[in-house]
Length: 78
Ligand SMILES: [Zn+2]
Ligand SMILES: [Zn+2]
Image 1 (cartoon, rainbow, N blue to C red):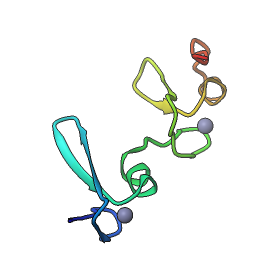
Image 2 (cartoon, rainbow, N blue to C red):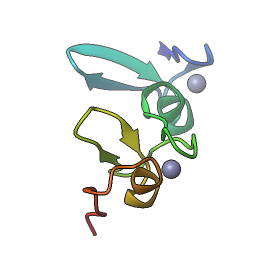
Image 3 (cartoon, rainbow, N blue to C red):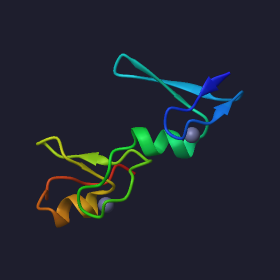
């Protein structure tokens, strides 16, 4: 039994996510995304796919959003 660190649900099917040396426990992918997913700096949606990262370390959900913010070098990786 593990307790989700986002919503506090004590759920027998909870799973662990190992990231950057830390271990996180979640009961659902929704909670995992809430905690782990970066947020697009243009449209503020949660980035659940690959997303794109600009040369100065900012995250965007897609190359379109990156270009809107002035990063013309970024293109989608299809
Ligand atoms: Zn949860
Ligand atoms: Zn976006």
